[in-house]
Length: 238
Image 1 (cartoon, rainbow, N blue to C red):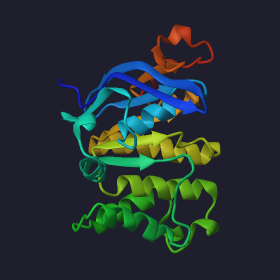
Image 2: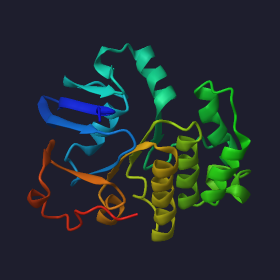
Image 3: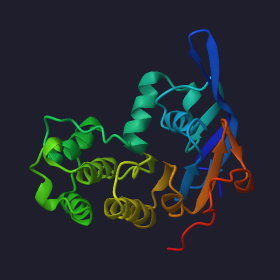
Image 4: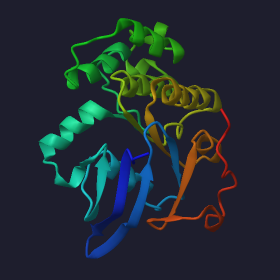
């Protein structure tokens, strides 16, 4: 099966004053359509930089990212924006909800931004119901718990039925109950809708929800046995 997501020799270096800090040092991998991949590693391993490159939110110094055959490095900023709107849903650790809008409006705005005129009320009701948000839709983020805010952020990412969901530490600020809700919803959307999910996490239990785990250290992909802080290497059977 052809690769749906392909990273080829990705390299990225940041400058801090006069100091160059390599974030990625030649990262390459492929992901099949409909696969759930967890990316793990300690702080400073390059996970978040990889997230931004995969989402077309920044450009690599070298190498390329291809999404369904389209090379992000060859697209203009406007074309990359259209690609994100059409194919990618994002879940961030810090939620990134608009504070003046209700939970429902924070979800709806994703459809407005994507220019999606074909609203599916039944799908909306299904997503918010599965995430336990039906009675919380009128509330603003300040009136929601952290777990509820992350569930709203996940609903926002899923509402346009994107081909790819990129999740950056989606359970990083959550208790075990809310973590289970978010992870099970990601798994369900992966199975029921065939969405390709790439999740960055520092949590071995969260990582085990994936079909496959990619281990990173010092800006490179390493074999599991070279990453001793990780004790969970086999994916959870669903």
